[in-house]
Length: 125
Ligand SMILES: N[C@@H](CCC(=O)N[C@@H](CS)C(=O)NCC(=O)O)C(=O)O
Image (cartoon, rainbow, N blue to C red; front, side, top):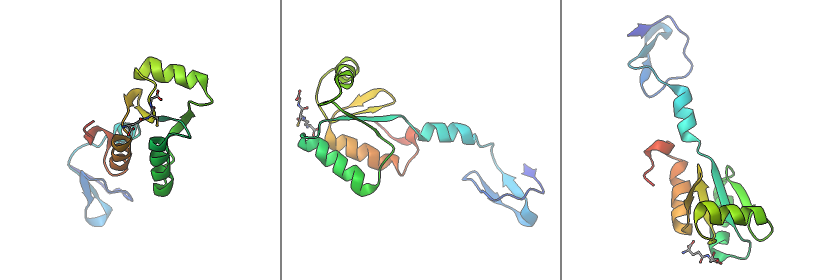
């Protein structure tokens, strides 16, 4: 299918820029769905004195990862309640990914690292 003439400035992975500014499309691209899938809600429960938490937070700072909402459970009793109720235990660090708990610091770092390079739905959790 060829749509044109269109002055396409963005070329997606399912199409390419054809001649005379035509945009050749192989399949409709649901950009909104793709964008929504790529941005899960990220919440990190931590304690400032926990070395595993410091490891995750330091990695995030060094890598410029700033799309995670932070909850310090040493000063936020509501966060503790939520961590235990929804996560199942009080251990930190814990990353909630769209409400799903992930507890191991190495897993959290690996997940956040992968999320920067791949669409959310492509990541095996
Ligand atoms: N293997 C875990 C260890 C996490 C851990 O031991 N966290 C401690 C704090 S440093 C904890 O939350 N312990 C349970 C508790 O304090 O109730 C990781 O790497 O994330």
